[in-house]
Amino acid sequence: MDSPAANKRPCLAKRARLRIDPVSGNPVLMHQEAVLVLNRSGYEILRLCDGTHSLSEVIQELQIRYPEAGPILTREVPEYVEAINQKGLIEWI
Amino acid sequence: MDLVERPYAMLAELTYRCPLHCPYCSNPVRSANQGELDTEQWARVIREAATLGVLQIGFSGGEPLQRNDLEALIGIARDAGLYTNLITSGLGLTETRAKLLAGIGLDNIQVSFQAAEGELADSIAGVRHAHARKLQAVRLVRKLGVALSLNVVLHRFNIGQLAPIVDFAESLGATRLELANTQFYGWAFRNRSLLMPTRDQVDAAAQVALAARKRLKGVMEIVYVLPDYFAARPKPCLNGWGRKYLTVNPHGVVLPCPTAWEIRGLVFESIRKKSLAWIWKESESFNRFRGTEWMSEPCRSCPQREIDFGGCRCQAALLAGDPAQTDPVCEFSPHHLLVHEAIAREPEKSAVTDLLFRQNPL
Image 1: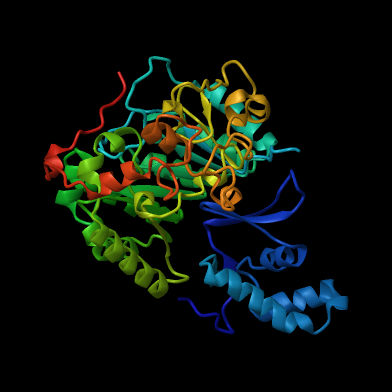
Image 2: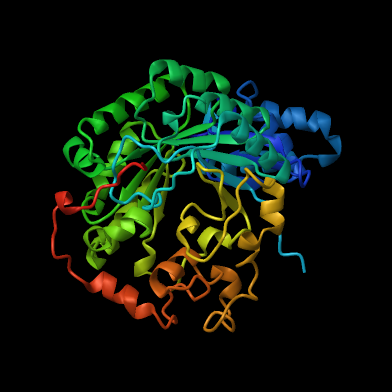
């Protein structure tokens, strides 16, 4: 499995796609046979997994946007990305 | 009580025509002389599906590449925001068409294989050099960077070779491998005694699949669909009739699942006459087995009734002669003996060439 090395940039796999479900208004991550319903913070994290930000840059960017979230981002963002990575839906560039 | 949710996924069976003759095909055995929907009709269905809440669409068949408007229809689905999956044999995928599909933004392509090795694969597909042509198609897909899944239908003749099949899928760079035990409907039902694996084969295959899933976690997703004849409880077919999925067949008939068309006594509506939303919400066929009110015993009082929904309606119709019965796969079904006998019976013949091969509709 690809391991999330510090200098690598996470990118949502080609077979996965983010969108807002027009019926429920919830963000969803769609892949082959499944639709994962995301919460808003999951959506914001994955939107930044576009292959141009390293993991620490994703965290920095979210800290700027959501200063009220505080230091918890440093732990939760990598955990969340790893959970999606475990599903094989992250590529490391 | 509102039993009607929105559909999440739609299977668009564009045609029943196919260059392959797989003896386990789930397409209906009876042919209907109703003609295929045209491009405009499909375009309307796809847009109506997106409005109704569908998020994912699978283009299937038969072989969807037999339709020269496939690219246009996938483009319409993409424009409607749908996740698009092309379910194909790979035969007919030229470089020009592959490039077009990649350019449109096809999200995933699922290619079927019959085995890991050419000679056996071709004998099952009933077409010479089919395997080699599939390999060509897969290489094209990989070169263009479109995500690739593989689907291998398992039965007596290939289930013993699961390990090589996994290695084969890995070597092709697939991100997902579906190991789908034959479901006995359509042509597969006709060939049931020959295709049926033994209990030992099924148990050994499950072990191989489990180990492979562990080893390849995060690299290639492995889905092993247990054969329901060998389970004690039925599968929650479609997560319930008319709950999350719908199928539109080549003639425009809207079905809860692709094989439901063969259930006698049910009348399914066509999009030639009604809107997709009406059929989903209002039609008698879609409402017939929603919820639990339609159930009889042993389902009616069963604590599992909202978990497996009484199993598969097609299987109840096929084996018990009545779609409203408990799926005979269930150990509590009064017809369970039929399933037991089907597993236990040794086939009179035993060669691939003894199978009844799928024919194209007239």
